[in-house]
Image (cartoon, rainbow, N blue to C red):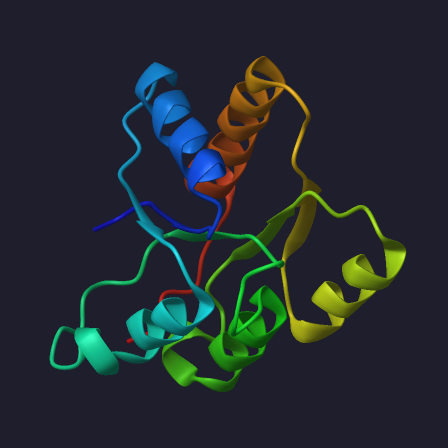
Length: 143
C-alpha cells in the first residue's frame, strides 16, 4: 500500500519532493501523479487505472493549481465517491490566498498547508505531516 499520493504538476516541485523523501528518517512509500485528470482516474479506477483497483493511499498531498482539472475538482470528485469520501486530503499549495483556502475547505479537504519557501523547511514540514497523518491520525478505511 502506498502511504502518500502526491498530486503535483510542477516537475521541479515533484523532484524536490522525491529528493526530500530520500532524506526523511522513516520509510514512507509514495506515488506522484502529475495531473488532476490522472488523479481522478486513479481514485475512481478509470482510464489507465481501469481494472486496477489498488489499495488507497493513507494520505493525499494535493497541489490546487493543476492544469486542466484543478485540485479543487479533484477534492470534489474524491468526496463524491464512497471509496474515497473519508480519505485524508491535504491541500499542499503555494497559495496563501484566503479565497483558495476557504474554497478548499468547502470542497472537503482535511488540512491546508502552504508550501514553505526553502528546501530544509519543506523537509521539516513533510516530516511533521507524516508523523501526524501516518502515525497518529485514526482513519476510516473504505472499500
